Structures are given as C-alpha cells and as structure tokens.
Length: 338
Image (cartoon, rainbow, N blue to C red; front, top):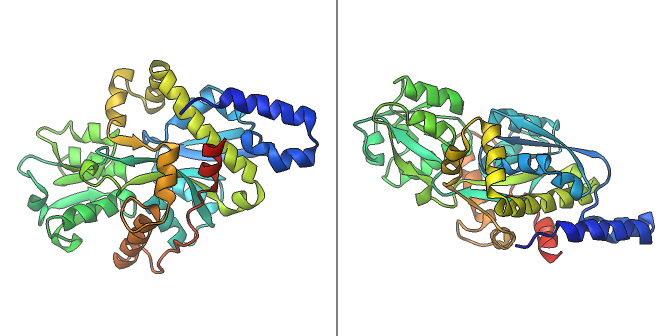
C-alpha cells in the first residue's frame, strides 16, 4: 500500500478553497476531513493496537483532519467498560469483547476495521510436567473471564475432547492470572504479550499451545459507536484512513516506530519485535475479504456467530448478542477506493 497522506492533504486544501461547506461535506471529507469535534479513542497494551500511539506522535490524526484524545488503558476490561458506558467514541477490542459488551447491554457499536489476528501471540503457558493440552485435564488454569482468550481456551480444549468441566478455571484479570501462574498458584495461564514474557519467567514454564494453530480465533478491531457512524461518518472515515496511513508510516520508518511502540509498553526496542511477531496485521484487501459474508472462520460474520453461541452456551450472556448489524465495511471500502 502506498502512502496516501500527501494526496489527502492536497485534496482537503482544494476542497476548502474551491467548494462550499455543503459541497465539502458531500464529497471532500472522505479524503481526510472530519467534523471538527474531538474524538475520544481508547486502546491498550496489546501490540496490535499500539500503532495509534505512532499516529498521535507523528501527527497523522491531524493530517487526516481530525482531533483525537487518545486514551491508553492498562486493563483491556477498563477500556471495554469505558466504551460500553459511552465514555469513548471508539475503542480497540476483540470480537469476543465486543459481543460480550453488547450482550450485557452496552450502547450500540459497530466494527469498522480489522486491526489484526493473533497467529501465535496468545499462548497457553504451563508449568513443568504439563507437555500438551491433554495434560490439562484436572488442572487449574488462570484466564480472564469473557475475553477472547477465554473463548480461545475453549477451542483449544475441544481439540483434545476436553471441556471447561474437565479443568478448574481460575477467572482473574490477565495481569492477576499471570501473577498467579508465576507464583505457582495455578498450573497454566492463558495470556498475551507482554504478559507472556512474564509468565515464561517461571522456571520451566513453556507454551503448550498458541493461536498459530487457531489463526482466526482472536481478531482485533476498531469499534465505533453507532451514534458516531450515524452523526459523524466523516470522522469514522478519517479514523480508518489514519489507521492504514499509520501502518504505512511504520513500514517506512521501522526503527523509529519500534522505539515509540516499545516505550509505550515499557520494554526495550530490541524486545518489542518479539511481542508483535505473533500477530498478522490486516491489509485493506484482507479487511474487505474478511468482511465479505461467508461460512468459514475466515469470514467475520461466521466467527461472530460462533462467539455469540459460545457466550450464550457458557452462561456469559443471558441473551445471545445480535450479530446481523455488527459489521460495517463501508469505511474500509472507501479507504481502498481513495
């Protein structure tokens, strides 16, 4: 993908000079102009979401005509709660998190971009003596309830004909789950970078499964409120444009980008690449392909339905979350067309 930022800046300038405000709203804002209202955007420590920090530091939001308050959450749950309550206009969250929030009565929201999918970043890490998923039967596993790793753990257990009834779950936040594992209080933990690094510090600890074997189970997205799509679609478009422009900047300035990303999560630049190695970032075309309805795990609608069933069957949702109106691909299509 080529960098489209100069084109957008020139187009926005021509629109301002040549067109009335009405015409600009109709045709020019999609290239990089927003409504002028500030956007509150949440993100967390997961490597797939950290590029937003690069967008902030490099002024890429402004180049796309928007003003953004970027809110960093150490806890994914805190960010999700802020989005569910309406305190955020947009947030970065997994498909599982989004459906959990909607089933719990969160304000309506829609997925507009696929950031990435985990292809090894999420791991099931076990103590010495546990060498495979089969060995988890009867063991105590720490995992954060309701998040995507909880869902993925179910998929992993099913691969060896086990269920949650065959293990003892210790439902803790991911940081607490990792601490419990390191301190020897549980036999295994399900987590993601940078918590995987901490968990592997326990003597003899090792990964017995990763999302490399489940490449479509843990996808992450930019999610915006339904109100924002209705009332401020140009802002949504500018956010989506910013995301792909930022990925292009990172690709062209890898060393500088790594320094920014590593600093945000408090690790050395030389260690950061190992955190991101287990993720596959989605291109625009991959976004369009995944948004296309289908009947395989590669299709986002299929994955959403499967997770909705999981939440209901496991008792995490009393009402099956609605998936029919969850996905909105108009913004990635427009970004690809520009």
